[in-house]
Image 1 (cartoon, rainbow, N blue to C red):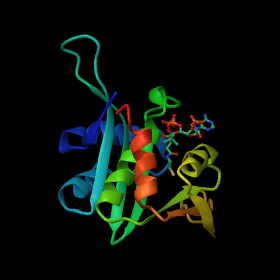
Image 2 (cartoon, rainbow, N blue to C red):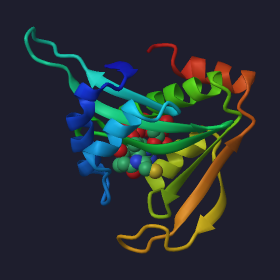
Image 3 (spheres, protein in one colour):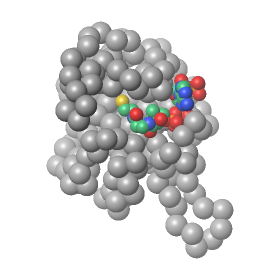
Image 4 (cartoon, rainbow, N blue to C red):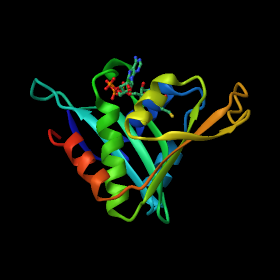
Length: 168
Ligand SMILES: CC(C)(COP(=O)(O)OP(=O)(O)OC[C@H]1O[C@@H](n2cnc3c(N)ncnc32)[C@H](O)[C@@H]1OP(=O)(O)O)[C@@H](O)C(=O)NCCC(=O)NCCS
């Protein structure tokens, strides 16, 4: 598995993962916008490298983090269903937060569906905790969002992220 910045060439595969992962996926043009128009957007992908020569690499996961002044907002993160449970999202989140921290982020926020316990467990490992509940935030099923935050991103947190990424 390799981790690198997202490029425009990745968008169709990224969009396919988005469609497999969310009931309200982003349109492809949103990723194109993030890549070309939003200089505060941090976009990483995970990519499985082929064992046989001639086979193209396959995008397996992605993350988008918006750096809003000193806050890193995790806009989306998803892993292809065939590659879940292998630790990819932990690497992607660590890479997104590391980039944001190095660019000045001191805290991070995100919204997560109240029913999405897998994602909540992931975020808790990164010291996010629930600070608010947004009733009927998701339009498709009126589900509540939990607003999760981690504060105090600093040298110790960066060191912890580096440990997480030591084999990347
Ligand atoms: C949430 C998601 C990104 C996790 O990706 P992943 O690469 O499978 O997760 P990882 O293998 O890196 O696991 C990270 C942590 O998530 C939790 N987790 C992962 N799979 C889990 C499962 N099946 N059951 C419970 N917890 C699980 C664990 O805390 C895990 O850490 P651990 O392995 O140390 O216990 C993935 O399930 C996904 O794409 N879901 C659909 C999109 C989504 O919900 N995105 C988040 C939106 S807020």
